[in-house]
Length: 274
Image (tube, rainbow, N blue to C red; front, side, top):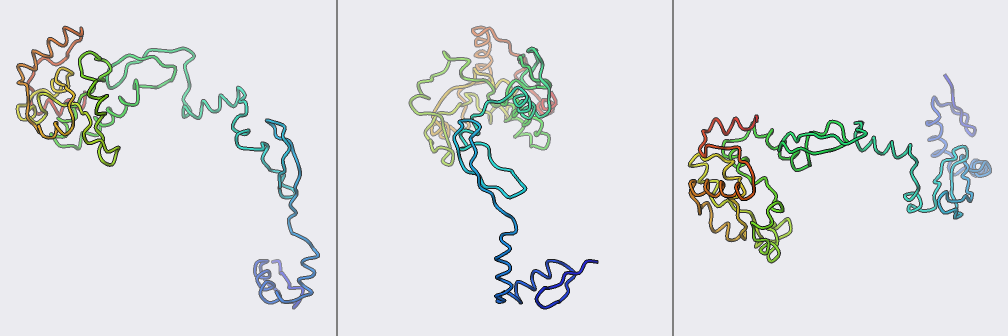
């Protein structure tokens, strides 16, 4: 076992740290000890030299510890961020972004697991056409522990994009009032929202298939203040909505999978697994 001895008072210590603490507090006023410590110089020497930036060749100073020549190679952060990546570095960045997944050399066609829409990509193992479908499918899988009301409202949500039907909705309202935003998310309480003409509450009370309520023919744009005043009031009956859906599908050459406008509770719950 190594013993550490104080040079001034010949006391022995088991560890170097114990000896250092003793010297620091018992001999801090010892002028001979301080003079010897100053004469020995710094324990680790710092070296300062001038080098050239690898990007712009501008000279700048760097400081590093003796024996550890580790320092920056660029004069500024802009020079460091504007360096040209080699093919090897680009490949490493690509693999890190993919999370270890490989890429196809050519685009291949896949079908979205949520909306059954075909899309092309080079990424291997991609099962959703976009982030929106990924989020909606995750919500659907989380519905197993929800109430029937929450499940019904989920499937009655509008899943289409208004941009797909530029001639069927009044976009002038959006330009005039903007989209509705809550007070803590932009504070536009008089903005525009999408409203169910045949309300979700009436649809659930009559056990109407929620896919009929989510059809674009059941959608209209109106201000949120008017929507809140309307409440759960419906402006259409199920017979009128079926006629609107049929006319809509003919005009837009679309197909509608649901046939029966009425549905049982167990069938709504079974839609989660589909």
